[in-house]
Image 1 (cartoon, rainbow, N blue to C red):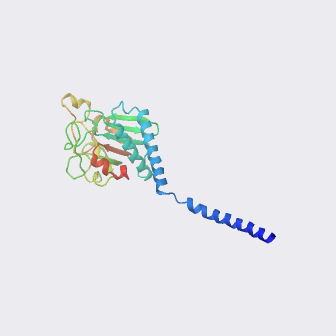
Image 2 (spheres, one colour):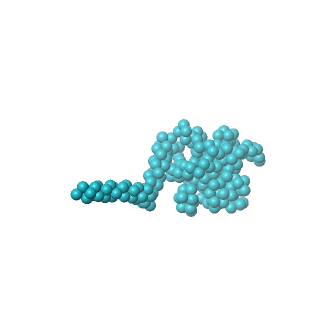
Image 3 (cartoon, rainbow, N blue to C red):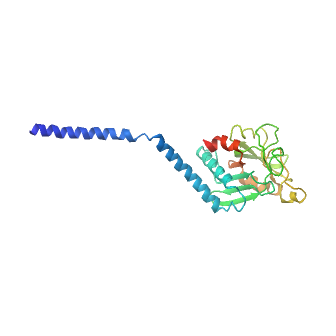
Length: 245
């Protein structure tokens, strides 16, 4: 009887050990459903933060589309994760869903949670008149290109102090550098222009800014900040790998 009891105890111990060894293998690998839930939570967190920032910064009152800011913030965070943005404190948005007569360029400081600059910005002459409706990545198109950019170094050229930018989205703006798309000042953009014209002047595709504000803007956003040019174009919003990846 004693031997049988001992055998029973040993059997129970072996069974427990087997269970303890088997259990981890069943819980180590998360299911695809679990991964989807985690990804959904992460996305909701970014969307929630974007919504909170949009409200806190009073961007609706300044005319910025909420969609524009949420898309900008989403792509900005993905670029942060990819270590592409060298100066993450600033996010610049050109909201081309608005009339060119509006102050539709926004520079946001995400460290201090403040709107640093809100001013005018031009679109390409072949993108439209008062409103931009057409966009291109092609050479000599004279159209604006949508999507995310990273700012580069400054230089002095035809328009004086100017800022080089690199497009980060293949098929949408990755030819910006070879097209000489830069941030520069111009006399055809700004409040005084409307005194003799029904809408703002247009560039050759560059996000041109008021001449009297170019030094401040260019020196603020140069050397590795994120620039996003937005328009509710279905072709871009559905095709952008940054926004949909």
